[in-house]
Length: 82
Length: 249
Image (cartoon, rainbow over all chains, first blue to last red; front, side, top):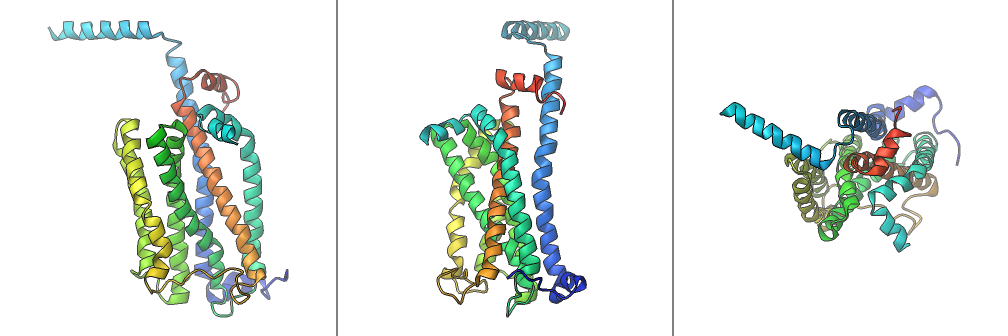
């Protein structure tokens, strides 16, 4: 059951004349497998960097201070429009 | 059991429970994959009719079935999200789509690469192939629909509806080879009579089969964890995580 079915490495690579089909399939499969590992890794980095950046930018703003600031901003804009 | 399932429905518990599980699932899946692929490519005997091109089936069959399974899971999660408004179900539904689309594309690519030496053509508009191509479009449609809305809630609702309606295609794909008498063969009746597939051909397929399933759930878990971090970014436990273990990413 566990004997290598090809006479030589060249024979193995040739896949009985179907090399392009067999290896092409396995290459496509390998690409998807690698992508499924790589994408979450990159995405994780991106999310963590994004969240760190947000943390630095707004140090624990309370809801009330946000409301006041936005109100001031709106009044300022109105003043400029007038 | 129910409590365990209930806990998985909470993003925080999902994140914490999968942290220790990920390395195990990665190890086991990669081990099964390497054994199955080496066995299937080098040690399984050649098929008496197809020669060596049949070795493509070791990845064609599990990825094709994986694509269909992924859509069923997507539809189930979409339904759970719509009916009970479970946050975690929406996260899994969202990440299922790109992973399932990848498997479905693989099913089509490996299928056509197998079809050329076996049937003499890369593609033919017959029932199994056409309904399977529609599965890929459904995945892409679900992803596009979700991305088309500015609000996450509207996008997930629209995508959920398409997923629930679109799942009707899965039994059509499955039964297409029985309902319409066309080119794609019916599945070999594994194990029911000795003539179908001898163990030295069939056993490596079990290895690649479980490897492909393991890798699917691994990808879904890894992507879900990122989605959880982002959606729960205002929660205290994420803030704590950011300060501790995620500080040096």
